[in-house]
Length: 332
Image 1: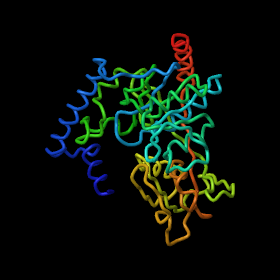
Image 2: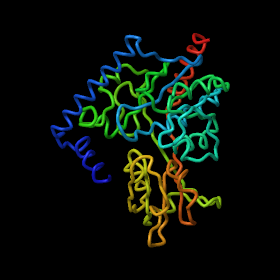
Image 3: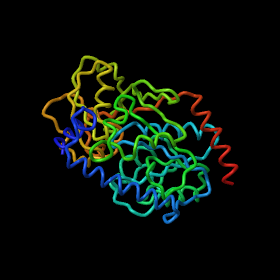
């Protein structure tokens, strides 16, 4: 699996030309995508409305762009402005199919790692379901007056009022090809139809909103309550374990503090079992927030989680607040 991921990354982002089998499969994918969009556009397949504004935060590329930290930040900011937000997501990696609410101490195997991360980080209601529209409707029935959909830009069965596209500011859209010849779920032109483009890192282009994902400390994962400033690890060697869409982003965050990183990348949503953190030395082991919800049960005293948060311009939050107010009057 790691070898396949590295080969695809070299094609998608490294300049290697896509081989002809991938180009053929890209044409098949493009055709299926076009047919599906036509079915929704013609009204043959319907999009459900849930009676409250729906804000979809998604990406065009496979892999991590930083949308989950953005969802968490927006949920917290909107709650501070008087909203009662809820977060709906598919619950990738979880076994639960029917829509259901997520409790802070739920089994990540039931709802998925991102759902547990979001409910613990934000304190707002979170619902998962194979059908995002059903999960969103459940939140509306529970009293949420705005629903944030984590991912789902391509989930047209749920009607949305606002769309926020998250872009990796360094990798952008890769080679510009659709899956599997490139990293794109939809053509780059899809970006022209969203309401906001948020760029995580790199240099935002005209009209894009700048976002930084930052972390300053590590928390002991053994439940002892210990905290450690990342600055305190400057010059030290650590094991960095990341089963996220773009593990290099986590490694780079740590290296930015002068930490000497031994990287251990794993596939996104990887089901950790404990052996992945069992190293034959006494170096600290640092994991991501998303992985921590699966690793806490076998963490020892040297295992730490690095929480991160998204930093956003206040003007962007205010603009969303205004747009949602206007939408809530129309929806009502």
